[in-house]
Image (cartoon, rainbow, N blue to C red; front, side, top):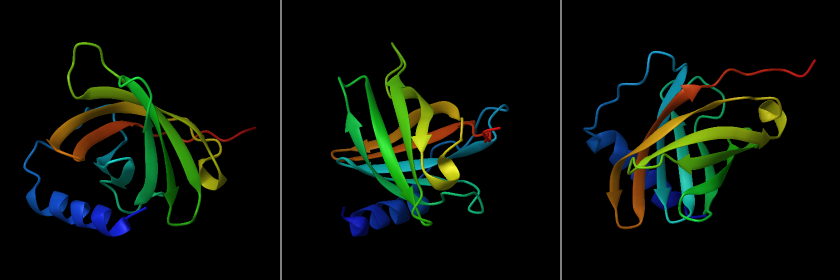
Length: 136
């Protein structure tokens, strides 16, 4: 994984992103992802949240869905599945489908939308409900 490219993209995002940062009122988490090829970095608007930042790999299925698996700074891993929203270019929904360590019992889901696409680089805004549930 080329973390230098991802770090550079993240810096460019912070310095130049001019898209709206509005999230839905029901969202209790939000952030950005920067993808370069199949590599991705995800950041949370709240830097104190667990898993900020996390670096991972994404696999696209049929072009309308895929999975991304991230590893956070504590070496815990989580996987998100996403699906394109039919008829809404650049928009998708996501759902947390598994993880290790702190991510084992997380149940979260939300939305994502592309805010910049330039050749191999894609920047997306995301938000959702990141409520954690613990196994009883």
